[in-house]
Image (cartoon, rainbow, N blue to C red; front, side):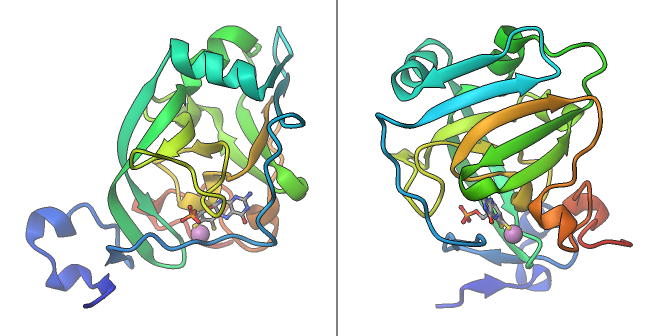
Length: 203
Ligand SMILES: Nc1nc2c(c(=O)[nH]1)N[C@H]1C(S)=C(S)[C@@H](COP(=O)(O)O)O[C@H]1N2
Ligand SMILES: [Mo]
């Protein structure tokens, strides 16, 4: 079995969904920097802070409550800058719009900074998070997120390269100013639109 398929070897309708320079994979690779964190539901929380009217902090039980109240189910393609793409990934969880409704970012908040375990951050122009395909995912492809894929919660921003979809999410910061994150400080493009091939600094 072949794991990576070139665009040229795909039927046209599938090839059209794979951005330039990407290969299709059937398997779901695991990719991140550093160790996989452990999840302790008694200690875990999720903060929403920064340029907002209401700063918030939710326990794991409160996140489960939010998940029961408003569900997002998003089918989206996933593009990693290291050139693999996976189509029709199914994400389930809390719509990003719920975070916005509850925290009320100030009118001139322009960026979302995802904060994860071990100090990992990713910066995202706010408009990508205000789209209806952005969510805090608790499940992928019908199963709770596995430890390697971000248990218990990850941000999913399908329109940008997957490094912006921060695994092991612990905080959402709204900001008036940009704050380049881990990969953005280490050579990756600040915005990371796969359809513009914004891979690295200078692209
Ligand atoms: N916390 C954290 N999230 C992260 C990363 C990371 O290093 N740390 N790497 C990103 C990168 S580069 C990619 S391609 C995706 C991969 O997600 P997956 O392992 O679920 O396929 O996670 C992203 N989220
Ligand atoms: Mo990546």
